[in-house]
Image (tube, rainbow, N blue to C red; front, side, top):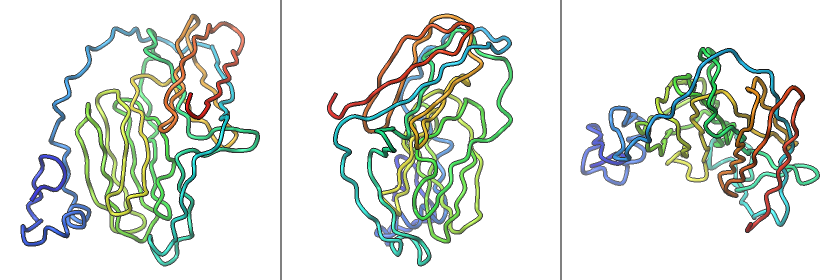
Length: 258
């Protein structure tokens, strides 16, 4: 029996086919040694050097009717969990749009050095927190669980090895790294409403909007840059911004069906 694509979980007996997801969650069925058939993109040429002084900041908003979501009762997660609302779009006051990844597209100059601080993806009341996050190539992503419940962390990555490992209780954690830039979904097969989006980037020029829709990216080299605004449900918007000595404003509005 296959526990995830191409990988056989030796602990999953054929007679227990109905418990495939449970077995893979408990025992990991780690696919870290399996690579996708997707061909890697040709590496781009970048120059490393000291960080710049440029700043881009702005507000991302949403215009239109917010798509309907669903309420998930806490007992479907664990006895102490609260009811949660799961929706593809999370808005704030005044049309602010949360969970938009804002990043530079292929900057030619990248600061030397690597991040020594891990990014963190938690599981809280059967939700991924945060729902959108960025991590640099080679940076540690620390996956943790705050739930006294069974979860499995299943990455749908293509340019990085897929992972599928289990967590069975609060306080557990696991550290992973990625070697190639890409965007992919993380899901829990035990709780199908759980989903997060991870952006792996080969530079530090990115930020995710919060409840107020605001973002700021600093340390930018001077010059013209393409800025990508990416939302897992609403798609992408791209703007060209010229960075100089003073902070530059870049506001973007997403519209449903645009």
